[in-house]
Image 1 (tube, rainbow, N blue to C red):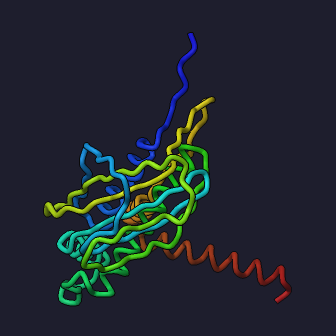
Image 2 (cartoon, rainbow, N blue to C red):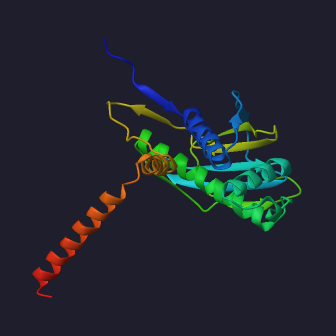
Image 3 (tube, rainbow, N blue to C red):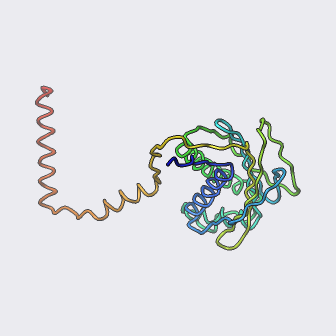
Length: 235
């Protein structure tokens, strides 16, 4: 009996993007960032107050990603991220209009899209690339027009919640498209560089310290190897 082919729709791709937003922001801020289970169908994407960021992507399919942060959500994410980076709280900005806040949120958007593009490349076996994210502090709603041709564009809005219950929104527009799985393939295993570093760090920490006798023997072996090398070189 033949199985019906697996189909990945535009909304499935949106879900991958939502997972990237939650994963990157949660891991970089050491806090819980979650998205709503319901998605809203919209007719257009907009930059909205207080802090809006957008990026255009194209390649296997085209689209636009917009994230609109409220001031409290932006400050919470910014401060949690900087504290995780080791910055003292006294040196952090308090206003979402600070250039430093905009720079950090733009960098986080870049990491989100990088994670999303990696998932798309591996799981859908297609290639897309992004424009440099643009972050704007705005006081009134702006409409963003997409400067690329979209085939039967679909637009969606998803709400996200920070650990302190501050809300921000992801808006997503892309080609109406489907990916149909014709054959089985093994997707590349994903790994988190931070997990890899932590694993190696734990190995080093768990390794027992060598005794003075062992350290001395190691130095003697290293010295003998160096002497042999010098002899071979005729020095």
